[in-house]
Length: 332
Image 1 (cartoon, rainbow, N blue to C red):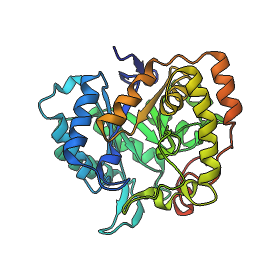
Image 2 (image 1 turned 90 degrees about the vertical axis):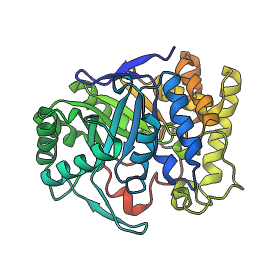
Image 3 (image 1 turned 120 degrees about the vertical axis):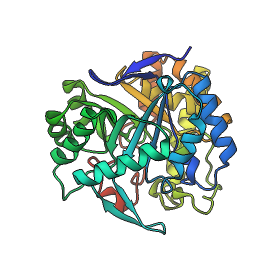
């Protein structure tokens, strides 16, 4: 049985692990549509209830794919987390962020239509729009909550001060932010603020985009369209250092009786019952490996060994290319 966790004081109860669907729409190179849909089905059948997507993942492709996978399922059996606001062009370029109230409602209308649902469970701006006060963006989501189109307010990749400002307008259920053994900047200020205010955390990138999955190697090259080809942590000179950390984790995983991926996911989950790791599996094979992590019980000695093997700041390279780092509320 999949365990459940509640996202903050005001958020929904969801499965202890969530499914992130981004990789099913080409973010890491070509993905097989039938296999992606089968993976969503397998996740739901295993008790996963939290599905995360965004309207800008392949310009609506991901929402349409998720809609197809969810067709025929009881709407009350899953929770949809949707990000919005990132602007795209017809090519690979990004065009900034739009958090204007009228844009919020426009984005929401399109997402509801593509997903084929009458409400979204958690709606969140993907990034902070520097030209629009967060109070205005959140105010528009609050209007949509009052109108019944959204159930809960979420945030993504913002700092502690922004969390406080947003929460003052309407209770925030959770902050979605990168959190893994290689990305621990949230621990300094953001995580304590979330806990003070009673806000949950949904952690993406728990396997550092596959870098600490135990399946990456120095001779593996990113395929065309794979965003990891532009990631500093996968770049030559950095990837060798980072994979040495993985080998240290592998020794601990072997002693613990799990895989490296399971160990890395379980470590994130062990940081608190208010944290829900999002697993970015895009095949049933990777999902089947990830799901048992929810049942991995790491002892104090295990956590100490992991901390020693991969201490904060151990990773080499930023988690995003420099142009994207500027859009984040916290660093690495």
